[in-house]
Image (tube, rainbow, N blue to C red):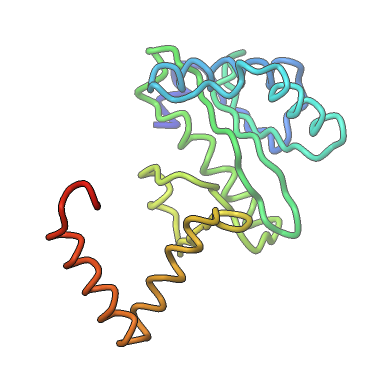
Length: 189
């Protein structure tokens, strides 16, 4: 596909960290359009989110990897490298129908993986989401959990279930109460 793409547009140019002015606004526009098309929330409609990425970039914390050819920006990956881990947050590609047959995302991903390996990163993190393309490159999956303490109702439910599993006396009493409620008049339930 890359040879066919180069045959149409000319040589491809991969940039590990493209600082051109068109990268962030174009990436945000592509991602917004794609999310709306798929019925997902448009995170870039909020100016604060766009400003967040601009601020990361101004501080040198954002890595914007790109693929270009023939004067066209074809694909963008926004992320960061921290402690030898290259993490991706936003992956967007040119939505023009003429480009869809070239798998632009994959065309960008291959040189990124090569660069990550060359740089000696310990991990290339595709971030959250279970998109099929990630499974082609995965060596393992790290389950993610919720941050912070669970709500009180959830903690209480978990504690009661644990008590019922470990205390036969409590389990028998709970079973008797449940049976009584099932046969009790509706006014008492």
